[in-house]
Image (cartoon, rainbow, N blue to C red; front, side):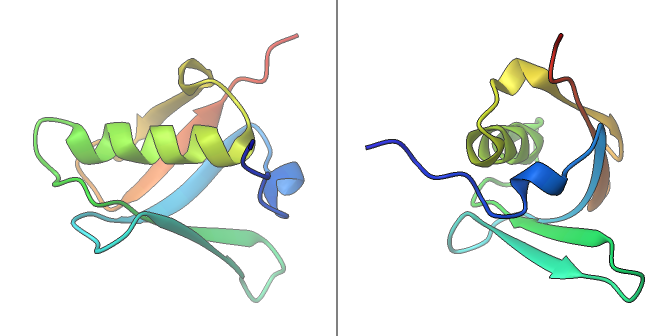
Length: 92
């Protein structure tokens, strides 16, 4: 059975800013609305923040939920920070 896309997936543009929690008990994405109505995502992954493991887990989880290949997502800012900016390439 294929995993369903998240209800907020269609609202995601070319870039996405997420707050990451590594070493969480379970992998999950929580979407919240900020005061200005923009989408704010919190991504929890079970991987430790060492050797890029947590970053890879974030990209894999987001790609799965967005219904895109992992190669379509790239962390462009925040490689070592909790706040990350992720570029999304949806192709032609």
